[in-house]
Every structure is written in structure tokens, then in C-alpha cells.
Amino acid sequence: MNDLHAKTGLWLSELDGSSGEIHVENCEIKASSENQETPFNIMYQVDVGSWHEAYFVIEIKELSGSLSVGLVKASDFLPGWKTIGMFYNGNVTNGRAALMVEFGENLNSGGTVGVYSRRNETGLHVTYYRNHRCLGTAFRLGSEDDFFFPCVQVSGSVTFAYSAPAQVPQSTDREYPKAMDQFLGEWKMYELIRNSKAIDIPADATVVFNISPGKSQHTYAVGVKVVNQIATTFEKIGKQENYDLIKVRPVMSTRMMPPAHLWSIEKNIMESLEKIQKTTVVNDDDLLLIGMELELRCKRFFKVFPPLHSYR
Image 1 (cartoon, rainbow, N blue to C red):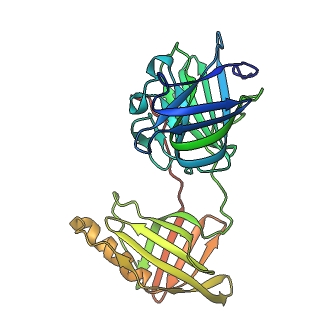
Image 2: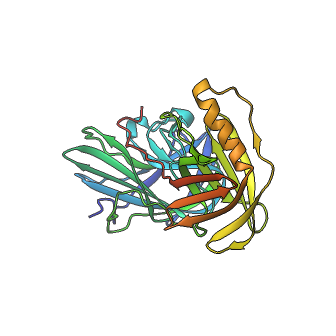
Image 3: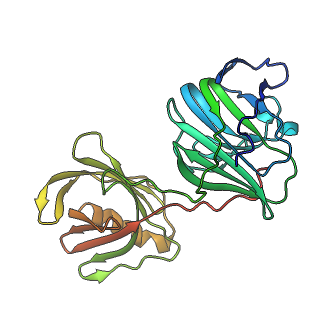
């Protein structure tokens, strides 16, 4: 049961509102900061009494600038960057600095952000949702007696709607989106074979390929990092049985000097990328990149975000 449901509160601006403006009409709220450099904070003050679960949803109607949505104690609701709490804006932040980067999608006009806090014998747990997809639990604090109020932090201007559904979310486990195109996403390399010989992958080398849509039809932007950032573009040029034939455009890289034990694997990846001729995805989980006397294998890769135990 959502302890925020059917509770009427009041949107408060920091101090006298001198660093921004707020206008409330029914369930639609408009807030703007005086400048883009300093955020304007507003908090939903509501009396929930004794509570165990609190869930609210912010629907972003229009956004110009940057927005963070989260929770704050009344005592930590302060002007500008002084506010400290538990926020989501694509990263997980404390209102002052990023604590976990690329936790989810950046916020923009349209879509929703949900914040679910629950208190039990193990402490206070805070989970975020983007467009009703669970991003996972970002905070797992120790015992907390104080209530954390809904809070919005904006640099620029935002129009949003607030709601507190009767039911809380059923899942707090991170849900991974299914790509519309099987090649898209992140892939961790686990095997590289050149001239019938397996190339040693150092234990401390996490080689992840990031494949995203290219600038034109049938192309993919490919990025990979060992030490240097390596980038190229794959272009689909035909089919051969279960494989897509590809043309690899020029491979580019930054030019930092890797440690000696990583130099070999980075050099092999650079040379291998240029020779790839075809590719396929097996069971939506195994990416094969194949060229002359070359085979590169990757597994789908999903980042793991262990919950933080403090936001300060």
C-alpha cells in the first residue's frame, strides 16, 4: 500500500524562492531557475504519519535544461547546490555530485520517473523507474527514522505532473531493455582467434563493444575501449546464409600509451576490426565477428549497479 496515495501536500520552494519560480495548478507544476548554473529545488511537503512504503511518479510534460527527481529530508532541503538527497537524472546523484553514472536514460520532455522508497528491518531502500521500467535499487541505507520527501531539482524550466498511485511497484529488480535490432547494445569480448591461435585476454581487461545506430541506413557506430577509445562504423552490404556481410570503415583511436600487458590485446583488436567481413548474433546472446583467419566472440553485457549505502 502506498503511504503517499490520497495524501494532499504542498509544493515548497527553497527559502523565499529567490533562486527560481514555482506555479502550481491542480496536479501540474511549473518550476524554473533564475539561471542554468544553479539548480532550483522544490519539495512536496506532506504528512504521511507512520510510513513503510512511499511511491510517486513525475510525468515530464516539458523540459528545457536539466532535471533531477528524488527524495530529500526536510532538514537537507536547502538553496541550490546545498540540497543533498537521493536523486535520479540519468545518473544517480546526491543533488551535488554524480554517485553512479549511466544508471539509466537521461531525462527529457515526455515520459515518467518513478521513485519508490520502502522501509523494513534491513533499512531504507530506494528504487527508480524510467517510463515504468525498473532501473533497480540505487540506495540501501541503514535504519532511517526521518521521512524523505519528494523533491525536484531543475536548472532551466520544467512542467510536470505529480501522482501517487494506490499500488506500489511489484518489482524492484533491474529490467534490461530489449533492443529493436539484435546487434545493438553492449557486448563483452570473451574470445579472439587470429590465424587459428587464441589471443590471451588479460584478466584485468574488460573489453566491451558498444554498438549503436549509425548516421545512415544499414550502418552501426562501433566503439570499444581497452585503454584507448577505438571507433569505427560497420555497414551492412549483403547476406550470406545466416551472416550479415559488412564493410568496415576506417578505424580510429585515441593515442594514449597502454600498459605493456594491455598493449598486445589492444593492438590485436585494432588490427582485427579492420579485417572483419561478416557477423551474426546467435540466440540473441552471442555476437560473432568473422574475417580472414579471424574470429571474435562476445556475450551480451549489462552493467551491474550495487546499491549505495550512503548518499553523503
